[in-house]
Image (spheres, rainbow, N blue to C red):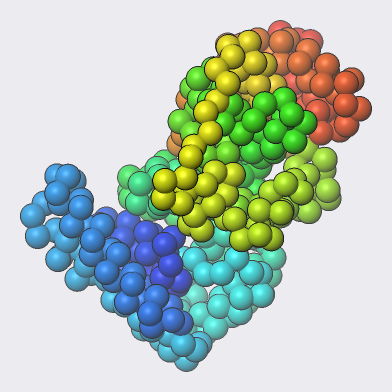
Length: 395
C-alpha cells in the first residue's frame, strides 16, 4: 500500500511541515510541499537547504546529499483548492496547517477529488479529534493522525492515531512506512492530547501551581526538577521554549476535551502571559526574560525543597501514565516509549513509579487529595489496584 516509491505530499510549509517534508525526502521519497503563502514556501526551501547542509557537515548525509535531497522536493504555492493539483500522484498527504478544525476539514475536502481513492490523508494535529477531521471526508476510513514532534527531523517520536473510522490496514501501512523513516512510532487512541500531551500535563500544571502557592520561585522549581529528577529542562524553561500560546492552547484543549477534568485545568498565570504577548523565547519574554543582558534569577539550592518538588511532580506524572493505560489511551509499552522519545524524560514513568514504589506514589496523592480536597489529585483506580495486588504494568 505504501512503500519507498510512494509520493508524499505535505500541506503547510511552516516549521513542522518543512521538517516532515525534509524527513520524507531524506528517506528517498519524491515530495510535494505546498502552502498558500508564497513567502512561507520560499522560507521553507531556504530552511530545508540549510538543514541539509548542516547534516552534511555533521556527517549524517554524504557530500552532495543536500542537492539530491532538495531536488526530490517540489515546492508548490497553492493559494486556493484548485492549485493543489500537483499533489495528484501522492499516495500519502500529511497536513500541517493551522490548528483549526474547519481549516483541516476544508483542506481534506479539497484534496479528496484530486488524489486517488487509495491515497492516505494524515493530519499532524496535536489536539483535535481525528474522527472530527475525518468526518468531513467521503472516505474517513483513510484518515488518521500522524503526530510529529518539533523539531520533526530531530525528535524521534511519531504518534500514529487512528480514529473509529480508520481502516486497520491504513494504520498498519502508515506505521510501517514511518518506521522506515527512522522514527519511533507508537499507537495512540483518538483521545484528547493523545499520549504525550495528555500524560505530560502535570509537569507544567503542577509547576505553575507550586509557584502560585509560593512553594518556590520559578528558578528554584526548574533547578529542583533538573537536579532531583534529572529532567533536561525545567517546566518553566520548557514552556518558554515551546511557546505559551501553544502550551496553553494544548492544556485548554485537553481540559475541554475531557469535559473539564480538574487534572488538566489551565492556569490563569499562563493565560496572562499569553494575553500580554509574553510567549517565551520567541517573543523575548515569558517566565524568564530573554532580552540582552537581562539578569537571570538564581535558584534557592535547598535539597529538601528540591525533593519535595520532585516527589509532588513525579506522583502526578506516574498517576497520569497509569491512568492513560487504564483508559486505553495506549499500551504500557507505548506510554513508556512516548514519554522517553517524545519529551525526553529520563526514564519511562511506569518504570519510574515501580522504582520509587507505587505505594509511595499512592500515599503522596492521597495526602495531596486530603489536603486540597480537589479531584486534581485523585489517584487512578488502576494505581489503587496495582498497589492492592502488588503488581506492575511492565511485568
